[in-house]
Image 1 (cartoon, rainbow, N blue to C red):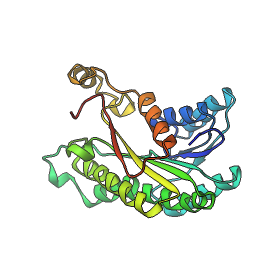
Image 2 (cartoon, one colour; image 1 turned 30 degrees about the vertical axis):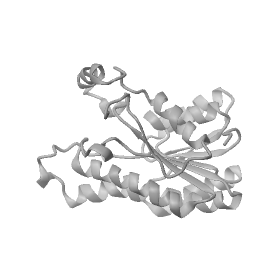
Image 3 (spheres, rainbow, N blue to C red; image 1 turned 45 degrees about the vertical axis):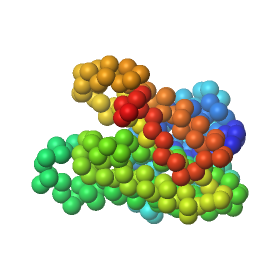
Image 4 (cartoon, helix red, strand yellow; image 1 turned 90 degrees about the vertical axis):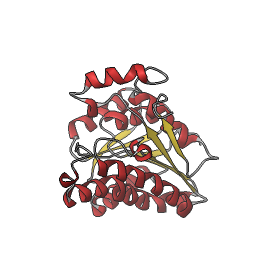
Length: 246
């Protein structure tokens, strides 16, 4: 799929991988809706960066854990640009909890992480699907994590939620075929604000990776775009981690 003039919705598009993806899509000629929940200033800055380079973009607020807000957001994007062709389900949250501390994994933590990381992605996919089916084409990329493969990560419920995202990708690929392709990009360690305060840990990790470098948001964004473009692929869970899990 040529991304030029396609309408793309990027959840959590104001920062980190979301911002890099929004910019990469715009560079390829896509029209970008930059979703945010709390990062209003960052989303506005991302939109301005796109516009300064001659692209088209808007910032749009919605909590993806709230299905009503998701539906209103998608409706507004479709009305503004005439439809939706691409969805990048990037928004996600975590809680940092030691794996051994099972008592700290409360019902509130489970509900919060699954509401955003899993149910939120489903809600976004469900909301955009009718617009893509109407055009008889569309592509969705979900952001997974190596935590979903290894069982390790910032917390036990985070790792489980990302494993659920990987399963959701396969199920959506079946549910939305043949007109909508659904794939999952699975980053390893990425140099984003999630590592704030843990830079020394990141520096220690890098030499132990096969490629001896931590992925950048731009690395992941480039592969997200490639997955959106690839018309002969759906239901795939693809790891981009500099050899971290090999």
